[in-house]
Length: 279
Image (cartoon, rainbow, N blue to C red; front, side):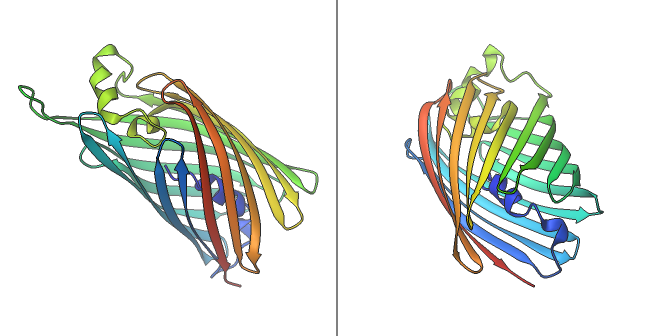
């Protein structure tokens, strides 16, 4: 759910050359034309010249069928250590609504990086718990399942003022979420851009083109993902503009649109602030 992490990774693309005590603090909000709203905050801190610690927290709420509501939380902590020219990342995360569906995630990446290019191999393990409320003669039910995700990402500079990046991940679930018997699960989790259902994906891949314009930066991102439960495919495009507000502060505006077989066409807008400090 922490959608600003894609931008953050670009901001921290040079973290291998950071010094102890450097930090980035960010926060902001995103809303969409379907009345969805999410807020998030993060911090990355260099505990050593080649080691970063990170943490983030995000939240959104939405209405569900059957007169239910959910409040989704996302939180993660991670560490990034640079071994020159290779690096390692590891992290743990919590996501979801404890009353309906939540997940404990474990992430690991190995990457190679220079000042002009990078490549990483990524692994994610997601352990889910789904609670189905009781209705009339049917008691409350709960069951666990998991997913293993394998992915990769790459980025490289195109001249002095442009960059191109690619990323993708595919998930293998321990249960078949797409079978007809799971139709009540689809109804329970809700079909919306910020809904729980939209975080259960079979695959996701995307690309971003970034262009420098003076001290500012434009980026255009394309993404596609397929839902693991409803099998719906979503195509998304996002344009972002990052520009300084001062010597140590940036603001980023984002405007995008999803075209989804699951929840239709949705337009979204975001604004984030980033504060930099240290040496």
